Image (tube, rainbow, N blue to C red; front, side, top):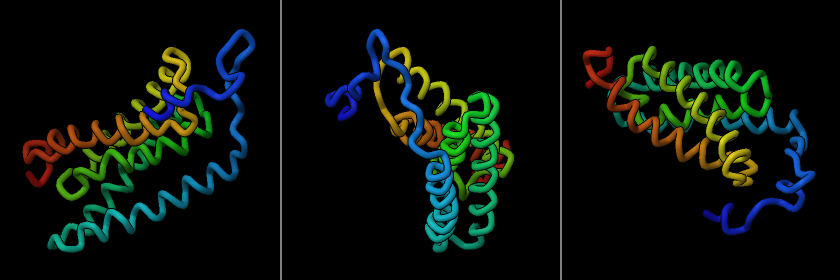
Length: 163
């Protein structure tokens, strides 16, 4: 809501307005991968009190990250911003069910989160003209909501989850 309240950056939308290029792809990559590395500590340590699921949480986090990367790579047409944020979308989505999902379900969860991020980022920027520079809403809001739904789906025993 703050993005809508503040409005777009000057020159972003208008007769000659266009997308601003990212400031630095190497810094984007570094920040993304630092978050990805730290995410494993966050997810695994959060599951320490549960008996014997730390390995499952680590594998599920990795699978969701890979799913998010691959989906964002294909849907985002190899755009580095989408690829790096696709990894984060997968990790955000798997947080809700990383201790109960089957690794295959985590891969699918991450892939759908990657697609959701790319499609909704483009939709918000181009159609709704909401200048969410970092894509916070599609990355955290939508990927997180999808992760909660996916936990219920892929956590079912019938699909290999722990129930």
